[in-house]
Image 1 (cartoon, helix red, strand yellow):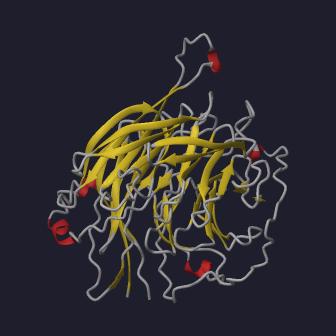
Image 2 (tube, helix red, strand yellow):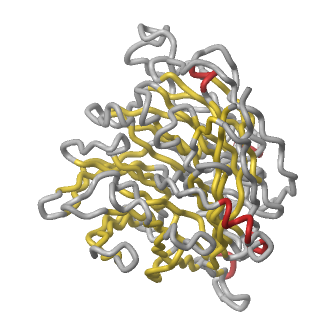
Image 3 (tube, rainbow, N blue to C red):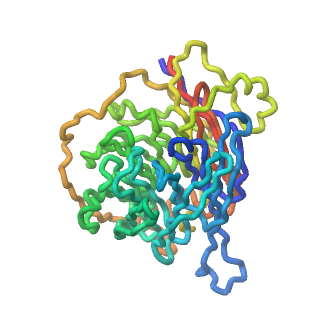
Length: 495
């Protein structure tokens, strides 16, 4: 019998603006470094003569934090802040670039900027601008991904980015300079291309999801006008994609339709599993060491930890939701796992529980003799503003759902290593009949009704929290509308 996953908050940090992107550094030796990006929309002044045509001013800030396990109650310390354009996405390269960790930042000016982490001391290192790529005028850079998701550096090192014009942008990074070169740019979607991601096992292949409700695959060695496949399985905009770094043919996608789909990339006609998570899925992150655990940031329904073992073995149609964390009147717009393995400080926490109750710390101790499955919780981001300022916010207050137990079963494989019925080189139509359904209308259509999505373009506060699950657990970071961020700890264990 398996025990549920439990989480508790370790620390809350004020970020002033909505914190919409957070990511722990994955480079060996730098796992204690956390980058956080914020987003703030200043609407045109009431007396602006341009009226509704006036441009919104999007501003933001980049924070750098250091996590110190020697300070169990206030482990996160700010070491740098940089005022920037509004930040839509942050991704670290998984390997050093020119002997330094490097982070890519997608911002509201339509640029992807790259910064090096310099300095030898973890508590005093700094991000320094290295180079940037302008994607084009009058657009927002919405996402980026590195080709190094398996922790291996390919030749050349590449980055894929998506933007609000529906385009994908492929870059290569020259480590010797270092410098960046644009390899290709192409129109992938009719409306916003919310997300772009590499196939980490074959980095010539990239995936994209857009506000046209389509999931597409692309072979960058071929003509970019023709996708390798086009899936219409999601019923609303596709806004999250991540390839598993552990299993070659496993892909996770999420959408505003509130469903997480698992795919075997050899057969993109039908997903392996379809899990309803009761909120739009803005970010998905596979656990860095536990290959069947998936973290999802589900907008109005908070974040959820999914057990995908049964689905990967093709005997379950949906994943088990191990844990659900919902904060009233807050939206979860992203998630990431830390690679830290913080020491167990439960005894000290119990001694001072009353003092730190204001941080939302939940103290618990597992039964003696528990065999713990360490899910090193990583970083979860939650934001409140829309990159395109085109849809409304509806906040649903939901109570935290019960955590379901882990199924005690053997370590599964994706069944059918041979052909699963997919057709190599399968190409489908990239079009979609949008009809008159208001929930299928893209934001490029002026004045139309948008789906009931959580908006990023709100001036409300936002927060980052640091929480923690019980047992040997790890770290996660999430951001909230109270202009703060928090780190939490989450753990699973089996009896």
